Image (tube, rainbow, N blue to C red; front, side, top):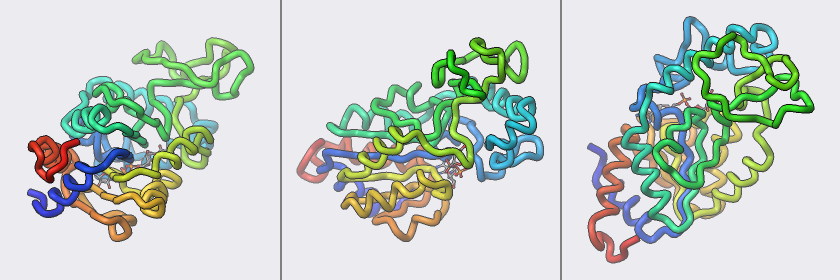
Length: 258
Ligand code: OAD
């Protein structure tokens, strides 16, 4: 059970907040059964995500990289949004100005019905032409599992398709980056279930603090930003978010409802 005082402080802040921005990472989907990247279940075969999720790895062995993505797509297709996703989806309706920036490519926030989701690292359910051929759109939805052939081919030019996700060493879409850095100007900013090791996503928490937000972290363990934020709660996202949500739902808990 989390320190009741800390929960009360967050409930109080949220009770008077108009704008709330949440940054999520793999820990939010852990309860759904999606493996995190840096946890003990983060390897596929003997490979670490960092060695497969790069343009170099794809150029060298597209078959291997696609086999990994096929495995993840299959796994995620069998996962359901859980409590943490549900609470955040309800907050997207509760607050006037709510933004959810997710590093997760699994689509579980959208499936939970969350409004105003910014997919910082793209979507595992989208594909792009690897060579960026002229006829293909920038990216498009493709939920076929399994592909009839691996690696799959671009229907426009016959070249290779690649997953519609951001890989290590690749830049974030400038529009996504701009919307995210605009959203850090808010009353309350929460970083939930992210190791805060991958930039620029990891920079958003400190940017929010610099912009005057009350910054809160929820994670099973300390991260590089824990000591820099206003409040750091150690525990499972699904449990802590439920406690906060129950506090918010108490009538006039702090003299001001949302
Ligand atoms: P990580 O795997 O790096 O970190 C997951 C974090 O979630 C860890 O800090 C865990 O302690 C925490 N965690 C696990 N279960 C939790 C739970 N039930 N409740 C709360 N916290 C929990 O995942 P990300 O931070 O999302 O990027 O990784 C960031 C990026 O690195 C990913 O988007 C991906 C990855 O490689 C790209 O693919 C570009």
